Image (cartoon, rainbow, N blue to C red; front, side, top):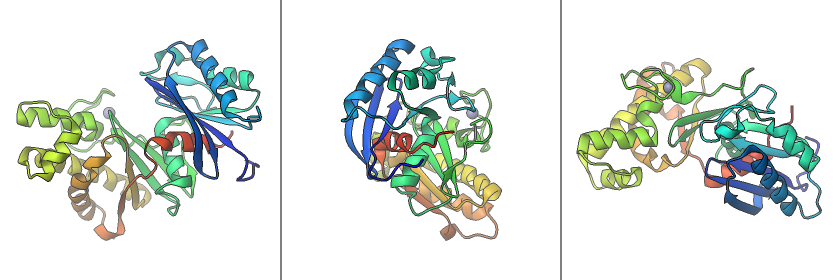
Length: 298
Ligand SMILES: [Zn+2]
């Protein structure tokens, strides 16, 4: 991008609830602003521009990256679909923000952005090829190949959550048997409620499993095996061996990893379970800001 490591970068993490903006220097978020997201396209773009100007001490913005939960067009300039930000569908967000800030703006899907953040400054730093997996309300993925984010020609690469893993639960995408329908934080909570007859948040399930609760352990066993099946498919297709797991559901990883590894061992011939690295992502909530700051302009 032609800027030296000293030049501040600016990243935006636009969520359905909160808007986060950060000034990044030397791979660290040195200043951050977090405010409730305005659910109106014009107001939202105005609040972004206003807060960016506050973050740019000298008033100069080199470029801005924005990560958001949605499908972005191939030119990375407008949002095609975003269930949590419906007011942005079809709105030329990049052009509008670019005009207000007088600098280039690039958009990207939030899972891809987090993958890029981990690649530049987190657990993926020493791994040229990996899949970043986010376990949250859904299951998302971001593919890093040769240190670069691989989006695919239409920006839809890395849809890890919708690989089919051999069960018959209905997924929000309309298909049956997607990983997301069994291993997202929400799906694991639903499974637990069905086993135990009472709802239990994922954090409590993790605690219960730690105390030997058989129902919680059974849910993680099922979800972990399915996670391993999806990882095996990625391993077979691309020979990827590094998986970074982030998102709100990542604390369950300690119970998901063992069944996942077992399936990987069974499904990926020519490799051993030890050849695969399943690591927790390390940037937490800052992954979005950091990754957005490192988005490449088209
Ligand atoms: Zn699906």
